[in-house]
Amino acid sequence: MSENVNPGRVYLVGAGPGDPELLTLRAARLLMAARIVVHDGLVDPSILAMAHRDARLISVAKRRAYHSVPQDEICALLVREALAGHDVVRLKGGDPFVFGRGGEEAEACRAAGVPVEIVPGISAANAAGAAAAIPLTHRDHASIVSFVAGQCKGLSEQDWTGLAGVGRTLVIYMGVKTAPQIAEKLMADGLSPAMPVAVIENAARPDMRVLRGSLAGLPAMVEDEKVRSPALIVIGEVTRGRADAPLAALATGMAS
Ligand code: SAH
Image (cartoon, rainbow, N blue to C red; front, side):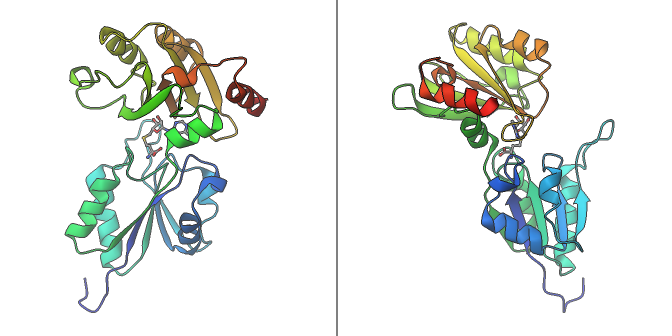
């Protein structure tokens, strides 16, 4: 790096669940101005289409048999471009600091002396709750909400005791493949097999699906309905589809 070059800035930007309307104004402005945009696979093409026409779009997404770009290479790419004097917009699905590995990228930039700004985004849990009319908290039904990763190192050893149950909502990211182990783990912790659950696939996108059932029926529902990523599993009373409840009616209206 030439000593005369001032490093550029890295913006870790949350792109929300996929609908461009759900970008923050700051995210939209940065995206429209950026000349380098590094994005992952969850970022919708309609959002990438908002980038400046001269922008270089660099994908670090997973594609079929190919593995995604390893995290250390992504960090190195951000640092390299910034040290060459370029501002970089690093676009991530949802919020960069909710299961987005934004923490690692921010640390790598700071360690290299590159200034970083974090721009929050609407995380899948918030987007899915709104789009499916499932309030994550509710005065009568839930005063605790937890976000967990359903696919992570040592899932079976993790202690999830108390995360789900009466008065609480559990939101599981990346849980489609491990739905059977998740249901088993929670029931082994004493959760009722009849506890209501919802699966929200492609939340806040035109092809959104909202499926409802019970904890015991979760694995079969995911398999029979061929649920695909990205999808969230929400467990708790708030997901109960009551015919008389105004919120359930709202969700039905939105789906039609
Ligand atoms: N940083 C992201 C999460 C990345 S982890 C955020 O804050 O939303 C990827 C997981 O997020 C997916 O496996 C899925 O569980 C969830 N997800 C992301 N976008 C989603 C969407 N539009 N609908 C449902 N789930 C979504």
